[in-house]
Length: 144
Image (tube, rainbow, N blue to C red; front, side, top):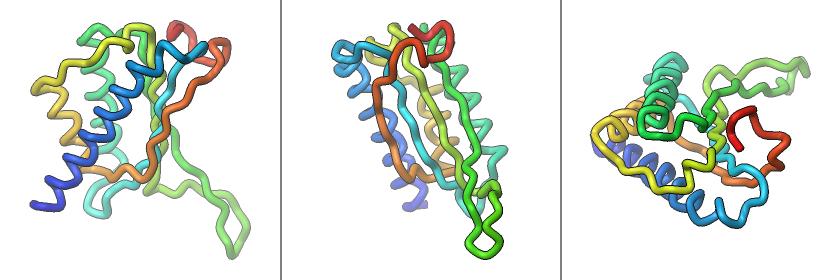
């Protein structure tokens, strides 16, 4: 239970720090802000539960005025050392969150926010979180 609580707090802080940083960085970014996260799927969970958390996150953002934000997941591919073949890890994913101009305002966390953050905590651990600024013409349509 303690590990779950620590993980939930870590995910909350990662989500919050990216959101707060996005607010301040949005003004300095001539392009589009994007948060990229690499997450490990917990051994006691699966990718389907993680994808459900992503859908809940997308729903929350859309229902709170961030309709143009784009959030999606990709699978991570690694090269095996023995066969040198490329294969999906199956236990690691990368998420992308392209922030729209609406994201320059601070999101107000509510019970639905807490629910999707808990879904992430129950299914994964964030391995790395990066916020960067990409050129507007490289962002998905509708974000800028």
